Image (tube, rainbow, N blue to C red; front, side, top):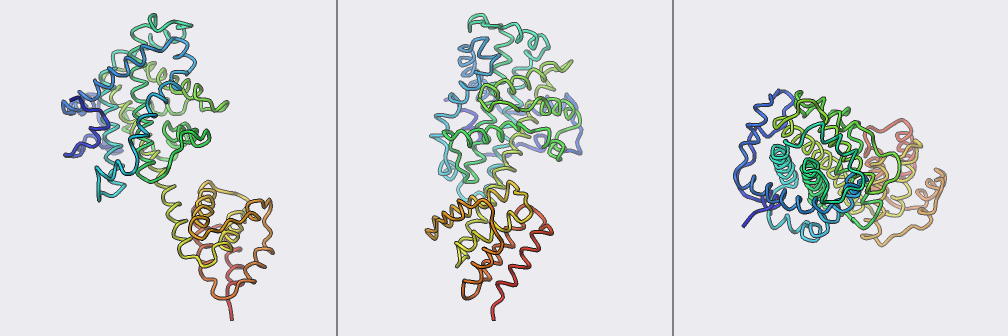
Length: 399
């Protein structure tokens, strides 16, 4: 039976060797890159070829307008994720990796996804020519039957890597127990941004790109610092964005099998690392909210104090917003506390919070401890947050 790439992720055995690891100190040349991809076992290659054949059937149903407009992404998303999200949940991974730490499982799946992308890059490299980019512009309303063979091959590469990165991001989220509701437009949009590093230029400048070998670093930057999505948040826009990335890749002079392997490998690796950073951080914050709620004997007051700390510097960081969202959820679930007054509040008055603190009898050390955690969730405690903590400490001292 032909195994799929998902099955291959779960295959037992040795991890990819050191050649598969990104190493900023190493400077692999093109020949070394091709050799590394050549180390894939027959099962890996068979899995990739099977999925390419499957996607060839999918691509054969696309028209020229589907490709140019980005509508191919709308169709691929449903095709790639509908059955997958039904099959793959946290229990799915528990059955395969019982007792294995989450970070280890995530690391394996990122490496394997990058490895599969590299194999596919080698198989599709024949379409990597600037002539394909020029052909895209002349497709017009071409029917599936008239789409040129070279464009079809290029689209197989694009849809393969796109589906691989979609499923990889979803796996990383599930492994960190972050639910992804693909029926929620806002959550879906966030998921796509994570999966494809829509703001990848910022991430590369932030140091993530250091993992990419110097040989392909300039090429990866050209792909990930292209036009970002500024207008509508529709799925065809993402499709056009991803097509543009692939055209940039196709237009690089002299690209062949070795560079195709490296580009597919390292762009997938970067996307996986980005998903890992985002969802691991959200899991950290959700875990933090659970701990604060479990320790609290004043859950409603904790929410007021937490929001005062968050808004004290008049800048609400994404991690602070995420923490408040999880705090409100776990306080509702654990303590059955729902504060409609706080939810409707526009501006929080410190005096009102101090009045609430003073009205509570007994030990308030749990409230003070929670406030200190909230202040540090987005990094170092700033001057205004420190001032609120100092004032809170005065109100919490009893006797």
